[in-house]
Length: 238
Ligand SMILES: C[S@@+](CC[C@H](N)C(=O)[O-])C[C@H]1O[C@@H](n2cnc3c(N)ncnc32)[C@H](O)[C@@H]1O
Image (cartoon, rainbow, N blue to C red):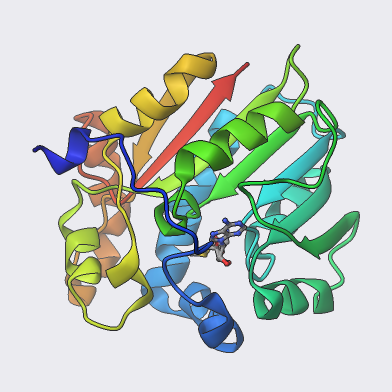
């Protein structure tokens, strides 16, 4: 079976493939590292583009918000943010950041504690890879978003990226438990809910000595519409 095209996931009882409570206190150090900051920059640029025409005053639900790193980005854009995560420790850290116009609670993305159509946008950034039932999370996000003009924003790690494969093969790392996705697989998962736009980004050199060339790497990766960037950003208009 071609793993990259398989959209059937084994339902399991546990919430996540990895115990994020264990890594909560060190989680943000990734974003502070040279490589983490570089990936963060290009990922945000891709999400920026997908949000370009959206009313930033609207209500946004962030599923799997973790330590609130992306919640701060959404809040800075002007959204009113509700972040949920199944990890108590991750949510504790997000709450301690006192991000304006945001609130955080512990919840399971597979069974969201919100009424139908109570948000304008629902976002999940690098979450679906770590959940036991990504399809259920997406259907719950769809339920909680307005049927008219509602929007999903999804970010996932690309299985076609050599760097992601390397991360996944590192025993004991957060990524070793991740189910990576291909762009086609994301299209298959999301396309049934509405018009889906996909951007692939994160064409960065693996060798840190070549980091100074990263803008060029990214530029050509996007120009040539390469499929193996590390990050897939998607927008669904419901
Ligand atoms: C890799 S972290 C990403 C955190 C944040 N979105 C970011 O990009 O910094 C994945 C997060 O998804 C959460 N998660 C996994 N399964 C979940 C579920 N079923 N419901 C809610 N959160 C979940 C984990 O607890 C973890 O905080």
